[in-house]
Amino acid sequence: MELRHIKYFVAVAKELHFGRAAEKLKMAQPPLSQQIKNLETELGVVLFYRTKRQVKLTRAGEAFLNRANKILKDVNDTCEEVRRIDRGELGQLKLGFAGLVTFDLLPLVLQTFQMKYPEVKVVLHHLTTTEQIKALQQNEIDVGILIPPIDNREIDIEVIREEPFVVALNKSHPLAKITKPMNLSKLANDKFIMPPRNAGPGYYDSIISLCHKAGFSPDTTQEAKELQTVVSLVGSGIGVALLPLSIQHLKNDRVTYVSIKDSPNNIKTSVASNKDNKSPVVESFLTLLKETFTN
Image (tube, rainbow, N blue to C red; front, side, top):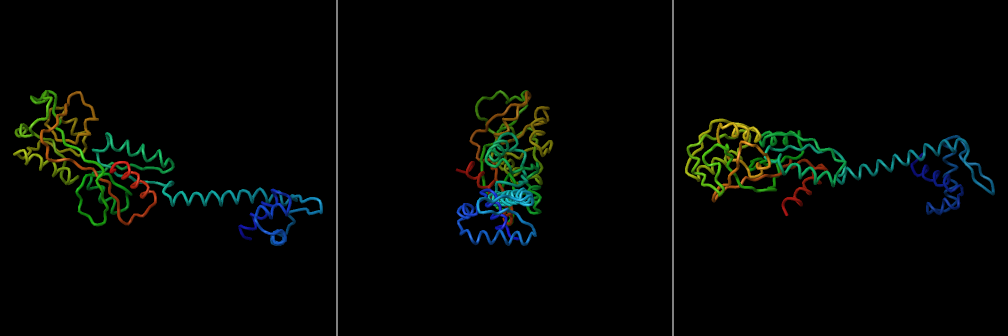
């Protein structure tokens, strides 16, 4: 029995007329009648009562029709499902992200993607840049949103945003009431809260470079991976910090953010994926991300 035999049977059962069914199927009536006879012979039952005036389903034909309709629906649904998977409209996306995108970029990315692909399940993994690179290599995540640069030939990477640094100060700090961009050199004697370099060399090195260009090396009093933790430590008066501009979405009553005068450095955010990952869902995500944030 082939799928076409089931389609032929359903067409005749719907029309209860071999001539009209043949027209619907765009075939001649004699071959259709022969195919139905072959199906009945294979099943060992009569599916239709045939007279000169009418065609009717037998009890066996009625039972077979119920199953046949379900089979055809399942086949059609399966075909549509695999087409949607192939178009990247259905499936799962494991997305890694660094802390700096939590406040604005990540929510926008998720909202934009899930509006277009509502049936793709996004599984989030909060990881440092270093952890994301390892996870991409081991296929533990499909895409990472991280801080470049990275040196890995297995990973494709593209910048999707650049933003300046700002200084996070406790509101009791002598410079906290400055309303204009400040010279970073004024913080040469302050204690700095820094990210650990092994969590993301690009982010750490950008901060060091910014301080060196201002004529000093930052005196680190505390290290913290998470930007929320850094802001909390600044609010506790432990030190100052250089953070991306988007941190201003994170409000803290004890912290103020001051822009930097003539800042020569921007912090970049990139999207990264394993070159060998050819998942249609990944392609859909990367395409949407690039269209939204790089044009």
